[in-house]
Image (cartoon, rainbow, N blue to C red; front, top):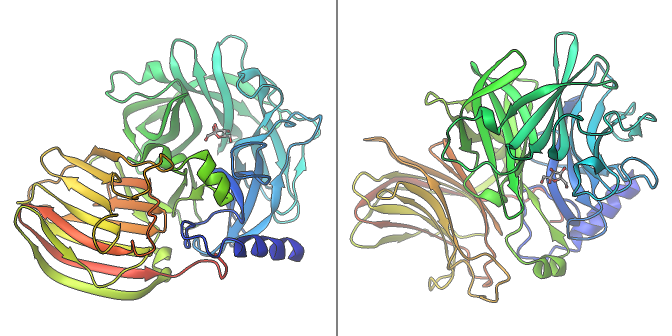
Length: 493
Ligand code: FRU
């Protein structure tokens, strides 16, 4: 174990001079990470598992990496929890899944891959359990516990089990797609987590009714839980070329989920995928997502690492019937130097204010009276001459919240995404705009009025691209601006 920790530390130290590597977001010691998996509280620690390729910074040969935290902020690296077994039902990968406490016998349910991973027949459900505080995992000798998709449905995918307890039974949903229907989640039932009976789809695209949102051909990594007086299902809506995270709000009866509505969980699309949440011991619903890179495979290979975990988000049900999202208050422990500015007037065709505080790892909280502005927002990672800047904007006329990264980097060789990400957002009369922005080298996470989030990646090339500016088109008053320097969560990055 100590050897493992020392090795992980050494790997992290190897990246000490990489200006693109986040300092206060979780990421593995090295190499590739995608989905959060099996997040669970156990004896005072939160355990985070994650899709991991320990051999390189690209998606391949999936293992379950492992880390644990006492405060949701600082993480200790732990040995790999699951690795593919040659000749076993997961020999070609241990893909996503979940964890349950199972009355003191912690159990992982995951997707074992054997054969061509594109085929639903190669995707099956396996389980593993631990009797030493989640450190070592023993795979069940009878794996897979679900060997193939149900016979009577023509599925295009079959993966990512998620399990909950309901009276004397366990229920499991599996992410799927049904040919000519679209995304679906399939419902199973069991008494003992080993023998599973297929029931029916908990929900599928046909049950959605009319929605303006495209929801892809497969619903990956489904999770399902009560929140307030509703039920919520989160998924990644997936298709070959496109993916984003969605949530459905609806009601649950007769073991079917009837969604009233579906929304994007984050406007960053592929930069916030595979949402995974847990109910913690205080009853909070805490959610993480995988923040994918926004740069080429060549660039990430050269870096030696890829993939970042989002900061933990607390979910509640808003009065408008949509999710309300807040960063976990525990993150405030990272706040170091603080500057506060009050009543800044931005006026004219393009009003700007440059903050004195600079940095690549910051938290920014800006409250705008934007009633008379056409557009306003915050620019981060700005070079002094404005050659590089990443703009978080609220466009009142088009009712959009976005991140404009067309000037995020002066390197224009196609290695990094330089575009505009955006989604619907508007203020009600008299409501001020509250932007809470977490900047962590190449990661930007934005919360707008606790009801919309947008996650982005930017790769500025200049070492002096560390400035913060406020801007407006038309008159805006910034009632307050708080900027904190954020401490690193690793002693080596
Ligand atoms: C989601 C996903 C899952 C799958 C895993 C493989 O990002 O595609 O559906 O289990 O990643 O790494």
